[in-house]
Amino acid sequence: MPASRNILVLYTGGTIGMQQSAEGLMPASGFASRLREQQDQQPQLQLQLPDWQFRELLPPIDSANMNQANWLAIAEAIRAGVEQDGCDGVLVLHGTDTLAYSAAALSFLLLGLDVPVLLTGAMLPAGAPGSDAWSNLFGAMQTLHTGVEPGVHLYFSGQLMHGARASKRGTATLDAFAVQPRQRHGQRAPNIPAALDYRQPRRPVSLAVLPLYPGIQAAQVRAMLTSDVQGLLLECYGSGTGPADDAELLAALKQAHERGVVLAAISQCPQGHVEFGIYAAGSKLATTGLVSGGGMTREAALGKLFSLLGTGLSQKEVEHWFALDLCGERAD
Ligand code: ASP
Image (cartoon, rainbow, N blue to C red; front, side, top):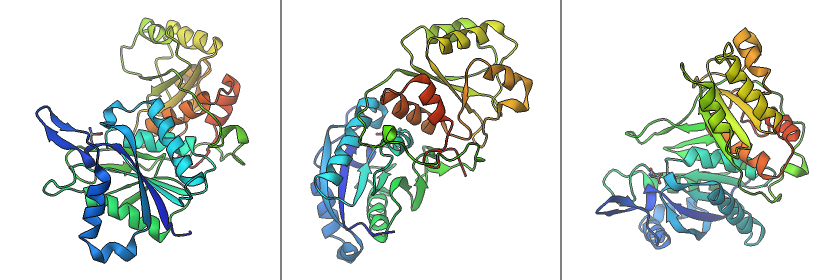
């Protein structure tokens, strides 16, 4: 794995660079000079870090405000850094609340990009007592300098994780991210078609996520699906089951599918995966047109739906590629 020598540091906001305000922590600009100053104070780091150029997406945000347009802007800035500025690695600084969602979305938006992209952030702002900001940031830079496979990764608390498999697991400890072991369920795509390449233009799409729960009513599902939703991510029980005895609920899903909505299923179990055929309650649910997301996390399934629907692929094409493993997202 080639070492990255000249990286783009892309600052999007997040706790890592936040400042205290009367309302609580707020995103702040001007992080480049703080980073340079911190690096200069640690001369022992010099040889272990790549050269870097800094870019800030304005305005910096609390990642709780992250949306699809932001993802497209991040992907665009990464592409410009690599193709126009010759960067051979990218480090995205991002708030932790939606870090795993962005890492997953970028894993699909950047398919085919030939350089490593790491995302990191911090649980405590740079400069705060006990902060993990500089250790995460310099650790990620050092990791890039040592050499990382092309693709999207999340770096946090000394751990390098698959960009489409990690989730935020905690709010009180510094090692807030983890990859849960899940079984692979789904074939690897033989190659990445041009239609899914990072150079394809994409646009925002309307997606919904619905966790099943005992007592869910068909009318609620129908209400969700009567908006302009193009894709629904259904978080099923266990191995892909749901209230399949509720004919009205099944009809609501089926009718949406017939109208062209992509229906995708994942398991609510942190270490689970979808295998509809194990239970009749799963098989029946699948007759509505649901496509299995195997062992994908919510973050991965949502990012993948966005990336596939965002390119304007047909319902059939989206279902085809959703069911295949594109970058290791469907688990071990
Ligand atoms: N709310 C912050 C954010 O996601 C949390 C953090 O960065 O740790 O931007």
